[in-house]
Image (cartoon, rainbow, N blue to C red; front, top):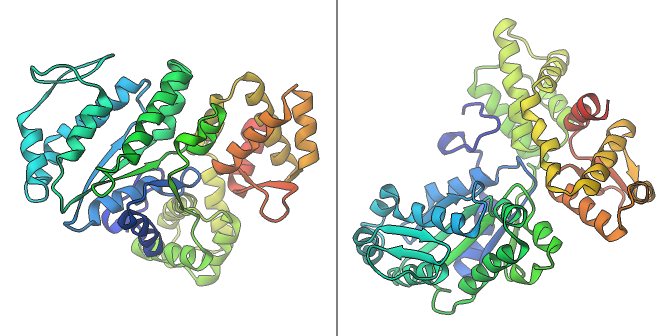
Length: 385
């Protein structure tokens, strides 16, 4: 197993979580549609690739990352481009011959504000064109459409186009999911590093996603994280005692694969110079991790989705947390008052910070902490001061 921090992993580099796959396919087989619920860096994209790489012949999987789409047109264009991709079409030869023949016989000739045109045919509405293709699936196959960064797409459309266009795209998706002729043929899986629930709540459009089944992708359980870290070290020819693995995990605390990979990466570099790992070396590895701005700067940049007042409020909350280690709800709303931010909007910001993995209030509903001590330290050194 290679040490890969910050990128989606596949094949032997994926640390399997069979219970998550089982949760997902329970929904798939029941005909439901899925919203993968998890903070950033927990491994949603890797999980989606795992689905794509391991499904049996009863399923056809298309994966598309729509993060760069800043309009509904661009979203549909990305989706149709993926459907027209030769590699994807070729997977249909033995799985869905009817759909294979249709896709091989047409080419997208025009994408416009009115819709999509196939060859010399008339321009038709995106959703209707997509619906037509879905109805062409062979009856014994189910198509799993995985839309990564869909929530970012909705956020982009709100920012660069309009709330109305974002609502229309959400409504089109719901209509497709509710179409009784497609229910047995198609499953949508949505994921993104921005919480879709938070994004749609901000524009009062939660009704367009309330049919989705939430599947949580949590951090690793302690024993699983321990096995993962041990396997990662042994795969990279590092000798480490169990007590030192436990020390490392206690320091990381928020046991997402990304954090474990980051520290393991630095341990490997130190191990090359002196082949020994103990608590002092683990501390040195974490210090080296904290020097890598690129691994953390996105946590600050992500907050730019908020308007100016919300942004300043969120920074103030996180600065206070990084300095004091915790912040009570009363102090949060004092900060909201300081920034002249309505209480309801302050609650929305806090919900987003919780969803996206910055903070939690699990120990005490009235008190918040950083999820990650490493992120807290980085924030204190680089943002708060």
